[in-house]
Length: 197
Image (cartoon, rainbow, N blue to C red; front, side, top):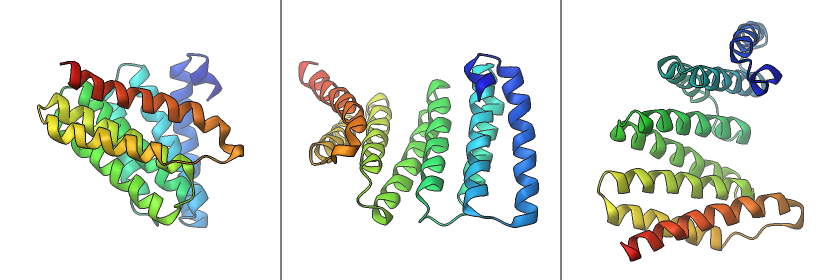
């Protein structure tokens, strides 16, 4: 990760590949523990990030898809695994969106939204999950709008605003407030854009 942050992407990719192989070996020995599965999913996601930074969108999608395929086999009750899965789905959606494959982007964003909604069912008192659902709603709404489905987009923007408006953060979650306000500002700007347009 230090190599990646230092913009030494080639080194990061090489090191992450070694990590992935090491974790796969540990899984073969110890079995599919949640901790190892989550680590492998995260490492595969970081490999996807490295490939994206190197301009290799195809390999990036492959790594994210491998992460998704692997994490999808695990129990939905594990919050960390569900978070990693939803992030990988969103990153594939982003790459498809940038490639102008809007149907595929929407499909991955919807899958991520569904994973995040399931996570809230298992962990209803985790505020970061509510923020994640709102972000996913915004991603789906944005692609809906781009595809010309304005009514669906507005419904999702409004649902996200309502969700964030009803979110009560605990004092120890003060760090989430800035993220909540940032997402709310984006969502409100999307609604204002429609009203002024």
